[in-house]
Length: 212
Image (cartoon, rainbow, N blue to C red; front, side, top):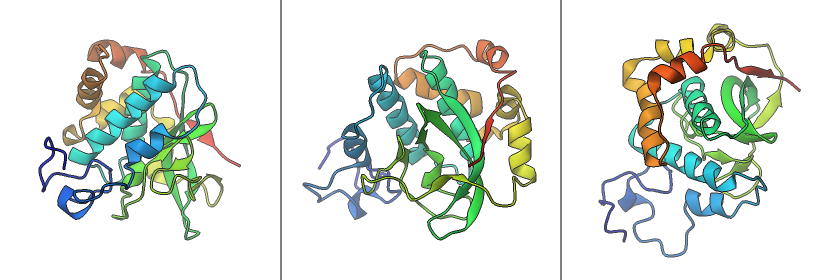
């Protein structure tokens, strides 16, 4: 047992379960962090990407946001860009493994999807986070199709697409963290940020609408 984790704390694997009901007695079951670290993602900033993504997952465990993809993808995008890492802030229609489609935002680096928010969708479903297109439960390519086209974005999706990132962050509910969430996660990874500077810097940034 990890002495830094209480039995009733969220399990560090990212499952959303309590530690006692998940990895407390596991000796050889890899966590999401273990699986992510084993993914062959060749990038000059692979260490920084890993550190940032894991910090986002750590934050999500203690402060989950169901259906918070537009906000969380924005936070991840800003944290990456502030480290000089080129990433695309994406939005589009994603196909669920069941065949249903839903509007969603995520981040892409070198054409690979990085998705923290998929862990808990707005209908309450829980899924594994996606790192470089890989499902962190199975270590295999995610079954979510990030290049799907159905009926087009709904009102909420269009609003996220058309609203500049800084304005979207400014309008997010306070309890969701928004700029404070960026500042908190930045501290964990040793990154110094200034909220006022970020608000100015990202006022013209828009999401990229992804289609097949």
